[in-house]
Length: 319
Length: 321
Image (tube, rainbow over all chains, first blue to last red; front, side):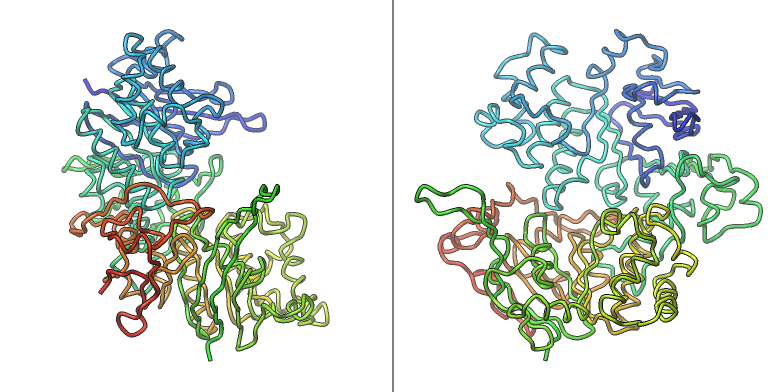
C-alpha cells in the first residue's frame, strides 16, 4: 500500500455563481520515503492538489466533486474532524511559500513549536525537544532564537522554523509548497540542502510543489508535470529532464536559460497559460504546442502508460 | 565616450529615529558604485534582495536622488540638472518595472497610456501621427494595433509587460533600465519577453541595464555583468568570464547556488553560512567577510578596492588572483 494514493481527484471552486474546475482528474502515488516533485505554472492546480491532501481548502468555495485521496489507505475525503486531525500533523505536515505569513506574528517561535508538540506529542513538549528541533534545522544559537518573534528572523530563518514545526510531529509525508520561491538564491540553496538532509536522515516521503524545474534534479525521485488542471507527464526525475516526452515539458525545459550553457535564443512558448474555466477543447496544450496536429484540437488525450513505466498525456510524444 | 557613466554613486536613506543628540541612522543602500554602459550594450546588474540593485537602477534615472557621486549620460552630468531640464533628458532613458500589474494605469486604455509620453515630449503633434506611432509600437512589441482600445486588466501578465516595454520605447530612448522585468511572469512566458528585449537591443541598438536576481537570464542577455553585494560592486566583467571563472568568493557562491537541470554538471555547491548583514550597520572591512569561506584577518579590517585581474574583469577581494 502506498503512503499516499490520489485517484481521479476533481476539485471545483465557486466563482460568480458557477463552479469552475481547477483540478481535473489527478491521480498520483507516493511510496514511503519517496520524493515526488509536482511541477507546473501558476493556475495549473498543483497547490490545490497539495492542499487537498490535508483537506485544507475551505468548503465552500472549494468542492471535492470526485475522486479519492487515500493516506495510508484511508480516504481523507470521507473523514470526520477527528480523523482529519489524526492525518494533519500525524501523517502529513506542510511548509508553505511565505514563512512570514504562515507563522503567527504575536507568538514567540518557541511557543509556536511547543503548541505543535502539545497536540501531537504531548510527552515531548519540552524546552529540550524544541532546542533539539531548532538545532536539527540548522538554526544558530537556538537557545536565543527560541525567544524571538518571527519578525526578528530573516526569511531563511523563518522557513527553518516552519520546517522545525513541520517535522516536530514526525510526519511520514512532508508537503512543501514552493518552499524556496520567496527566498534569495543563496538562502534557497541552504533550505534545499536542509530538506535533502532531513529526507535522508528521517526517512520522510516528500511532495515538493514548484514551478522551477531546476530544483527537480537535486531533490526528486519522480516528477509529475501539471498543465491546466491535469497531469501531462510523470517520470523518474533524471529521465524527465534528459528526455521529456510531452511537448509541454520539453518546451518548458527549453524556454529556461541554463547557467553555463548560453544559447543564441530562447525557445519561447507562444501564447499564455489558460486560466481555469477557459481550458481549450481537446488537448489543453494544443493552442501553444509546436507539434500540434489537426486531431489534437478535437480529442482530449488520455494519460497513457508507456512501456518504460512513464506516463504521457499526448498521442504523439517525443521519442 | 560611454553612454552612461556612474562615478562613485552613493545612495543613503535616513531611518526614522535619532534625535536627542544621537545622529539619525542611515541605510547604506548603494556605496561607491562606478561603472559604464556603452551605447547599444546590455549590462546585467545582479545580486540578492537588499543588495541595492533596484535603488541603483532608480538612481540612474534620478527616480531616487544619489546622495553623492555623479551620473553622466552622454557626457552630461544629470545629477546637477534642474527638474525641468531633467524631464527633457528623460526621453533618452526609460524604465521597465517589475510588476506589470501595478505599473500601468488601470483607468487608461493602452492607447492612452502610450499616447501620454508622446504628448509630454511633443513627439507626435497630431492625433493621426500619434495613432500611427502607437500602432507601430504595439507591433514592435508583438501586440496587435487593435489592442490600443483595451484596458490593462484585459491582458495577461506577459502582454502587460509588453505594454510596459512599448511605453518605455514610445519616446525612442537610448537606454532602457529594466528592473526584474520577467520575475513576475510565468516561466513559459518569460522567454517571450527575454527574446523581445534581446531583439530590441540588437536591432535598435538600445542599451540595456538589466537588473535581475536570475543569473541564467543575465548570462543569456548581457555582454557584461556587475555583481552587487550590500550596496557595493564586488565583481564586474565580461559575462562569460564572470560566469565561467568567477573571481570573488561571493560570485562563486551565488553561481554555485543556482539550481540546475543538468544533474551531471559536476558543479560543486558552495553553501554560504548565515544571512546578508544589515545595510544599516554594514560590517567593517570587506562587507562579505562574515560569510566568506576564505576570509582572513585583514578582510575584517581593510576594505578591498576593485582591482583589474584581466582586461575588463575587476573584483574587490584581497585574495583573488
